[in-house]
Image (cartoon, rainbow, N blue to C red; front, side, top):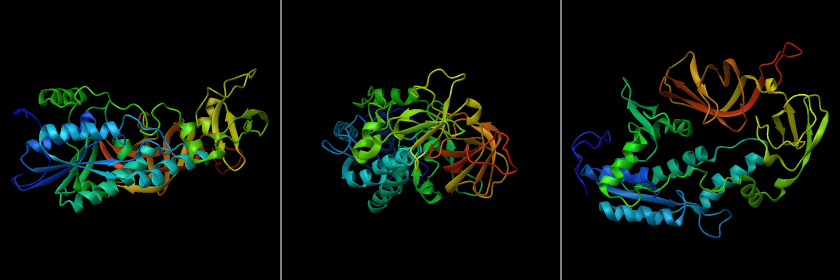
Length: 381
């Protein structure tokens, strides 16, 4: 294995690395492969672990990502190349029950799910965390692009990645303080290009492997087909109505829509463009309105995970993975935006930041319109 003196290899473990044991979550991609290689270079004992999350013939397609057969072979080839042990654990049933079923049920309930967060909360961190502990590891290292920073109080903090284009902090907001003390993210300070350079210099067989662009069990972007396999009633249609309950048309199933969507409504002859404002699972109705109806002033959050210690005051909130953070404040379980925010969808996460530090976040349960209400009370958007 190539030896470069400038490779960043700090795994934030005190004392000599000889005698230390690092477990690396290996997905078969270039990121986790470089983490394993950097870990091996420290002189610690390194064990690569891959979770097989689904297989051929399961309820979903196999894809080129962290769950599939080719990725397992790639992870094993990397482990052989750098000379570390590698183990595969079958978590297919756990993944199907905790991630895929939840994904389908959320869509059927009129919410917009984020399965990658649910996977991190369960299979990837909770279960892998336990595996690493059972293997006697001093830490569990992953290829996520976030930074682990030790605060003035000696406790670990979660921060954005140095490369904003690769930052994955939104998807890791549910990481607990206990997990954060044990986890390591060696790539958080690097740009992606440097990671690929390291992989090429070391001679890793995955150095040029493309990044996965889709949810691992939805490789072609066809969410509806996945939901149908789990929920055969997914294509139950219903009415498209405006905000005054006037019927404007018919839809072919709630799974085809999300809050903020404009395309695919197939509503012609209207004076202004309409957007999906709300999905009512109880009545199977898609409620549409003008863009201004998407303006949200507040959102109720559930299952809030707080990493900010005694922080209080204004913060920045990110309500979609690709959204820009906006100024807001958290009052109990209510997230209050300083200015109206658009496209805030139940089922998504609201992640809170103080600068680069992740304060925590929660799941968007309900939103309240920023439009003037007809009475003194606000009404759900």
